[in-house]
Image (cartoon, rainbow, N blue to C red; front, side, top):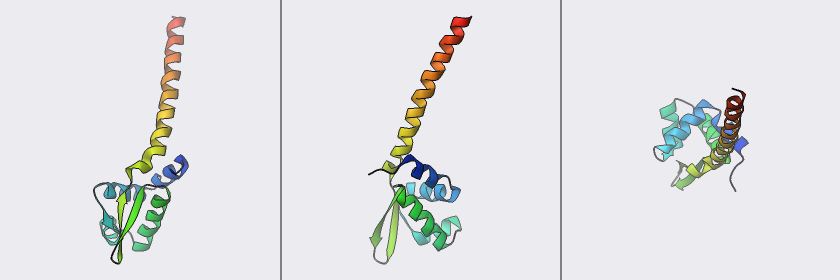
Amino acid sequence: MPASPDLVFRALADPTRRAVLERLMRGEAAVVELTGGLHVSQPAISQHLAVLREAGLVAPRQQGRHRIYRAEPAGLAPLIDWIGHHQRFWTRSLDKLKSTLEALK
């Protein structure tokens, strides 16, 4: 089941989480790799990954003693749907406003 748009927005509201997701979009990485690249402690990265995982934006896999994380592009679907809905609303509203203004001329 996809996460709610609220969870996705909340997850992406933090700049460190956005940086983690952007890094994972370039390829899988272990927590230790994310820690070094972002200059953030391992416990902090783990907390950020937990939020991203809950929102459906990343997924782990076990490789020996390490957890390897990858981005889950499908996790952005609730956000894309939300944006699409509002884009249609504003497009229709602006079209109506344009028609009204042209009728007033």
